[in-house]
Length: 512
Image (cartoon, rainbow, N blue to C red):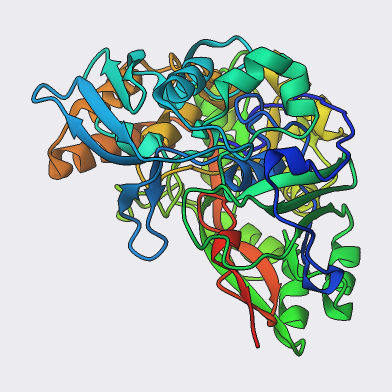
């Protein structure tokens, strides 16, 4: 999914004031003990069902606990709010047993809350990302601590999907009492390691430890957390070097070497499932023509592009799927840079001289990619024009199909490839193959086969075939696999951004 911002974030402007002592929030930490994160990504809505934007994804993991956790060291699935579970012999029924746990207001977390939360994600019209629960037929609370989930068909990745950012459990009683808007527009009742102290949209979100959090002894620090929205990469870096913030999210590639050399800064290139690629609109010419798409792909030197944009810190992409997920086919040769062949294919397609509208947002990488695409496509006989837009207009245009090409990025929430293929290359899975409208029935059939196949070797072959078909047919143009470039103050220990875009703040302490 794109954080994508995979789905456009809902505009949700509301002020959050007060300490909310009635919700059982921990006392204020001293200002010097606050952990401050500067990020270009905004928190726009506090309801974990309603947005799949990058800033919200990172926030939801801090506010809402999930049924399953992923071990930070091994990647294995472990008990979360569900302390145990069983799967029926036919693989269609999951029975989850909840531990004793409470919300930030001290009320118990029950099976009714779980059923309510999952039902919203699965069926509510405002749900931004129902795909992880696409195989769910029903969810029911059979007693206060037992949840039974029935699936339509065997779905191998199901348990892992319960760990995704939007699976956080919310209070049914609070939503019903205050109403949907008020429950999340004022201090929300949370189930995760933190609760909201103050929210100033477009500026900052201030969190404090939730003393009712089920993991006793966590968060390890009683410090407040401030998520600061700082658009300028130069400003973010300067604030880190001066000690005004402790973490910088989204470090520009050109800043990496300087921050590596900065005393008291730990500049990291953290593992991620991010893929940068180029969307091609297949609803209209020139890219409704496969030969034209293949020509556009062969015209791009993604090795040189990767080096130019990322200063060599990313890896050229070889398939349509992220390089870090399970069953990524490292043996696939990828799309060769061959401008002579590109010219021939473009001539065969009859699309020589066609205008190509390239959408580009203001980000440095997006601008560089657009310029490089423009130069290399112009060299083979297309007439590319860059159209600069803001994020909202980008999502509006790509969603409506009012574009020809757009270089962007997305990531996968889990190590399993199912959500990746559903998001990026499946024509019948609800995402329109990430607004490209690529549609191949064989690929869609393979996507479904992949969810039901329990043999890892056979699953590997299924996803290998999906990658071969979609790369050869240029469902998208793969560019590069990028790590998360994040810089940290050395006064912190235990903090990182996971490949699932979750902060490990509950594990974080100050270095003595």
